[in-house]
Length: 335
Image (cartoon, rainbow, N blue to C red; front, side):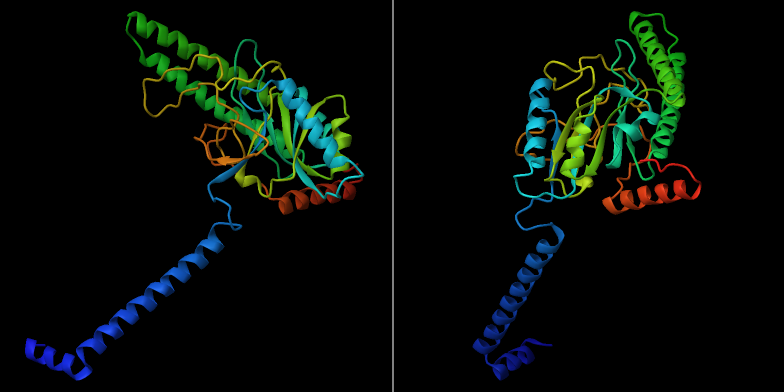
């Protein structure tokens, strides 16, 4: 279209009128985009006013004394289970044990609750070993299966460290020190693998769902150290749990006081003692009264694949399936 033809068109519709139509069209389009953006934000970001990056944290606060955490958890549970208070339904809770327990002891310790995941580590003398997060779909068989999976991971770690040790052939002080470090890391990984395969007493915490009355009953059991209710938790995939280790007595430090294992190959991860992983694989750092905080750096867990977190419906169905199977075989249902 030449300049004269264009001018003719503008004159035909009226220059001012065309500009008005264009401006009106742009304004309507912008308004539509804004409305769609607001609607999309309302549907994609969860409840209004909730930051999609927020994560609920449950457990002991770094810098807090373990005794203080235990007292706080007990107070929260007492208020939640108080018959004179508002009625509360099933709620998530973090259960910490006084000592490490074998898988076959767990059904009795956690009887009455639906178990979603457990935490385990091999307690070796003077060694801060890694923590394994084990999701539970079928109770209690998945705990044993999770330990066997953790053993396979430790086997691979042992092979990696032995390979690194063999790759260092120099006689200088640095390589001599690294060889000793890798050899020690390989021995630790081998001990962990052997312990997990034996069904060791390694579980020290669990995430469960139950009524306040059931949680209060679990808290009264001698082997249970604390029951930390978390009624604010809606989904486990946006929640971090930080249970205290059975041997922790004083103030919880921000970082484990252990020397990390150096690496000389980029494809082998360090076995710096991993901070407690959560169900979403994020470092757990605090559990203040306002437990909604921003996300944290990721940590290495014991599984080579991302860990799936069972939903409440899956946990319930799995438990019901286990009970039905046990009844069909004439055995007592396991919880």
